[in-house]
Amino acid sequence: MIPCLNPEHPPAFPPVTRALRDPAGLLAAGGLLEPEWILAAYRAGIFPWFSEGDPILWWSPDPRMVLRPGEERISASLRKTLRRGHYEVRCDTAFRQVIDACAAPRSYADGTWIVADMQEAYCHLHELGWAHSVETWIDGELVGGLYGVAMGRVFCGESMFHRATDASKIAFAHLARLLAREGFAILDCQMNTTHLASLGAAEIPRHAYVAGLKEWTRDAVPGTWPADFAQADWRS
Image (cartoon, rainbow, N blue to C red; front, top):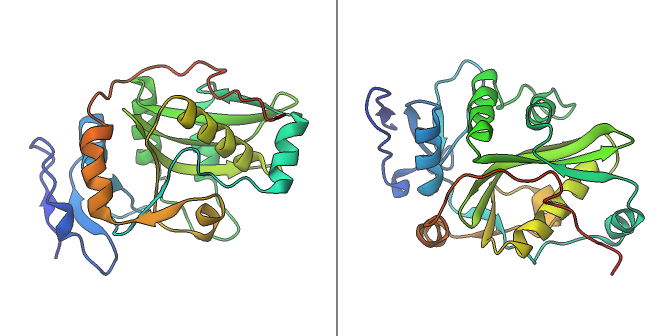
């Protein structure tokens, strides 16, 4: 059994050590998708994830999939694409379009966890300066991107999409460069996937991730990312 959080009380999550092993990482249900709740969850190593018709579910998997900025893996073919520079990368100019695209149906998955309530919650976080998008544009068209939440020196990645070859990987590569340049400690990828591993992400114990959050999020403040914030020169 997992505890049910009272939405009428301030957010108070159980210790992450109480998360279930099956399903792996499930910690609690209920509560609210308000900024106070989501930000408190991230600070504790917890994130919301649920499907249409389910209650709000909160997770903290062990181990945790993360990427340390500077350790991203850029394939030779992707590096060639980056050097071509036939695209434009922007930040925070089309956040809602990015999250809508991430929530769209995919051929390899049934449904989406980015339900309408989640979309509105993260758009609210974006308006407050916590959630950000990195977008790939070609010929004035949004063809790929990703979004997540920045807290101090942690970027919690949520989802990515592409409508053109390598478009999401382009956004990811530019994000990784941005995070390294700005002194971020970690890019949280949440759960292990083959795709994330191919980009250089690796698992660490949950206790190490949670312990790091106390330092990484200490001076977390919201802010606006300029449109050219993720620009990078890949010619060298």
